Image (cartoon, rainbow, N blue to C red; front, top):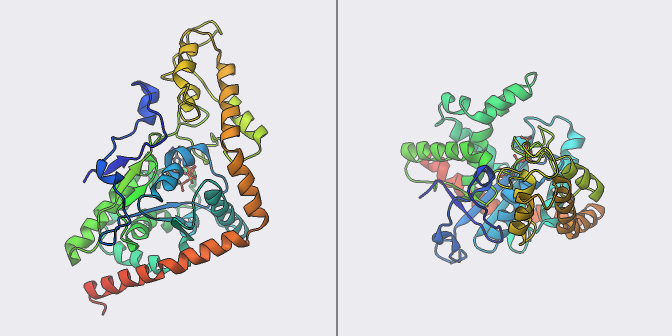
Length: 363
Ligand code: AQP
C-alpha cells in the first residue's frame, strides 16, 4: 500500500509550479472510494487534532475537510488530543477551554456525530497502556530523529519534557488502538505517520500480526502556507488565518498576506503560481483560473486579490461561525457528543488491549 493517498473531492487542482508544489494532491486511490461500511471489513479512519485554541485555514484545507469527506466512506473516528497538548499547554483552565473550543469547532465545520465518532483522547485512557507497550518496541533513536521533536526543542527550550519525545509513540497508539488504517492529516504529519508504521511493523514482527499499518490520506492542500507565504501555516509561527474568528480579524489576516514578492508595481504582471493568495483562491470559487489570468495580465492588483479572498473566506465560513457560537453558548450538546463518542469506543479499545496483553504474555 502507498504511504499516502489523497481525497480531492471538491478541491480544485492547479497547474505545476511552486504554488502547485505546496498544494499538490498525491493521486487518488480508487480503492478508497468504495463504500466502507460493509459487515465484513469496515475500514476505519482515525485522526487527532490538538486542542490548541484556534482552528486555522491550514487545519481545515489540510485535514478537517477530509475528516468530513471520510465520514461517509469509512468508520471515522476523530479525537481531540488533550494528552498530546499537555506537552505544551500547562494551564488547566486553558486546557479545558481549548478542548471545548476544538470540539465545537469540529462540529461546526461539519463533523456529524451520526456519521462519525468524536471524543477526547484522555477519556479513553486505554491508549496510554498501549503506548507503553509500544515504547518497548521503539528504539530511542527513532523518536530522537523526529523533525517535530527537534523543532519543539528549539521552540520551547525551557520545557523539553519527555512527552515531546514520546509524542509520536502516543500517536501510533491512538491510531491502532481502534485498528484504523487510514489517517487524514496534513503533510506536516508525514514523519509521524511513517514512524507509526515503523512502530506497528516492529510490534507485529515481535508479537505476530496484530495491527494494520496506517497510511496517510491527504487533501489537495496537504501543506497550506501561512500569511508569510513561506512557512507552513502554524499557530506557533503566528502566520494563521483563523477561519471561525470575527470577519474583521479574518480580513486583517488576509490583508497581511505576502503575495508575489517580484511584483513591485501595480502594472507588473503577477505570477499566480507562486502567489499564496492566488493559490488559495482555488479553494473558494470555480473562477480561480480567470482570476489568475487577471493577475498575469496585471488587470487585477494584489490588494484586489486579497480583498476578494478575504470576502470569500468570510462568506464560506459564515454558517460554521454561526453554528460555533451556538454550540459554545449551549455546550451540553457538545458534551453529550463527546461522552457518547468515548463510550462507543470502549468495546473496541478493550478488545484490542485484551488481544495485546495475551500476545505479549501479560495474560
Ligand atoms: N499548514 C497546514 N497545512 C496543512 N495541514 C495542516 N495541519 C496543520 N497545519 C497545516 C493539519 O491539521 C491537523 C491538526 O494538526 P495539529 O493538531 O498539529 O494542529 P495545530 O496544532 O493547529 O497545527 P499547528 O498550527 O502547526 O500547531 P503548532 O504551531 O502548535 O505546531 C493535522 O492533520 C495537521 O497535519
